[in-house]
Length: 239
Image (cartoon, rainbow, N blue to C red):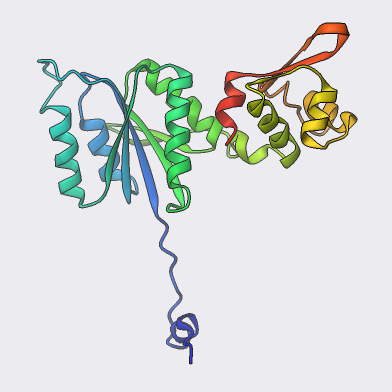
């Protein structure tokens, strides 16, 4: 005989409280203080920490308290939870977008919420991390002496506002290494009508198309055909 624990809890006058699990991403740049990461851990929810960082050299600097690897171990021991590192070669947009995308993809089934702490990053990587938060619909924040500042971002990221048809078009472009020579070829690959493809590329009065969203470019190819090419951003948001 199975027992419904929710019914038992309600009968005892208790409401079941869902435990939301949060993955916190911290951005870090070489030579910065670790205080921003520590403040984010102290002030914001956290069940797992992932630090996205540029190459760290642990040079002699007044801002370096202990070597970075030792700091990561210290945090892991103090939190008694999982702490991971993701290294990027630079703070440029595509690098950081890909890192955030991989963290979200690998952990989306285990966590209910994702947040990004940009306090410990340099100017470039912090800006690109905020852009990544906008694209993927993740909350971003920074911390100073006054407390936590949540950054205003779009509540719906690209991945959430793209319809199945738009995603099918992007997926077809990815499978053809980013370029398709004509709408006819795209129609054959997706099984979609050319007029429907055109609406999702160019948009309507009620919905922006893939071109307006900056995910696909359309150029005149041979014999006046429309040649489609996926943009760098389009590659990033395609899962």
